[in-house]
Image (cartoon, rainbow, N blue to C red; front, side, top):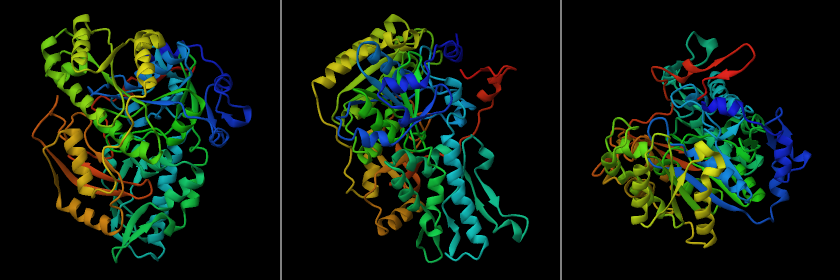
Length: 553
């Protein structure tokens, strides 16, 4: 059966039962139909003195285009914890419509380790991403309205940094002209769209800890510079309250369930290749108060999502992760070894490609907490291939577990949770970020590029260097760094597989996300509005007369 067929046959419990299971009262959540709910932020105040559970980060090696099952392992792992007597909640990101209708399809796990209702979550869910798009575009509309009505702030239209947002892959909107058609249609200027999951509003929602904090952060967004070169912020337009008002429901974490009726918070969805790639701090903290083990994931491979989780989210949220799980697959490692047919047994290409796993293990160990490898088994994997990875990890003195959670659900994660409980229980190590915030912007970019990616050097464009000087003069040098680069390679060149060496990371542009509180470095050819493939997943998605959806993987 396909993932969607498995999901549609699942016996879901009413969301009120799931809420009751984790200790929520009727006044602490609002139902969105039978199987979804928004949870009130008051829960965090209620449990503020309760000890946090243990936090487990699930990440992965550099993936093949369809992905390696990181969300599937996250879901399967929380099912395993609950199946074998532990209290666990998963904390995940919300899927973006871009990938859903693009190349990857649905993003709610797979096989017998999925979050449900799968169709709702992958499509509109509770409307969070639409609310984020609306808040983002309110700022855009008010900006252009201000220009049209006299430009009291003296905005330099050549230095407007705020774009428009749409949660869809649409390459035709990467470069546009606004305001054509005469004076009644506004001031003509060049602009562009970015996908909603790359919006600073999305980042702010995921990094805020209250509605007031959200409003404050939105007010601090730099949207342009005036003709004297001074930064202009959203609070100068006096609309931070209006933008926050559009997000008053979106800021509340969403509660759903897995196929095995275990609780899951899904909230926020920034991409990890072009944004910081983590679900909301609020959802993670809520899960930590309501369970003993929280399993969360960060987008794409460990060089992207995990690094940003550990250096941005954990630092800003004062989180203390206890273990890191690196998901590895036979097919991805053979891909990195130059293999073309990833389904045939090939130990030679597997051996060549396993250097990619080695690098990610090496990177994650820098953060001071236990690292465990989870082999996410596919039905095409042979016993020899699985054993090769297991033996390699044992030689490298790294704990490793076989995961069969796609096929078996929680039962297939028993080996992994046994290792995690043991490792966490021994309290091995203490989380520490990769770099100090007191380093200069260039030093922090170099630190990530050299230590995490393995680059020999970083090359900054003249434009990037000019922006760095400006930001340092403005007092923003002490912010963490969010590097936007391809997810297909440790380098910024998607064709360099395995563990590339002697490459240079090219930083073409530096951007400030002053509201979210980090600096974005654009590496290589990365863009913030993806395009659809020649044959998008949308062509396979359909709905019948009874409303039954097919094709969402």
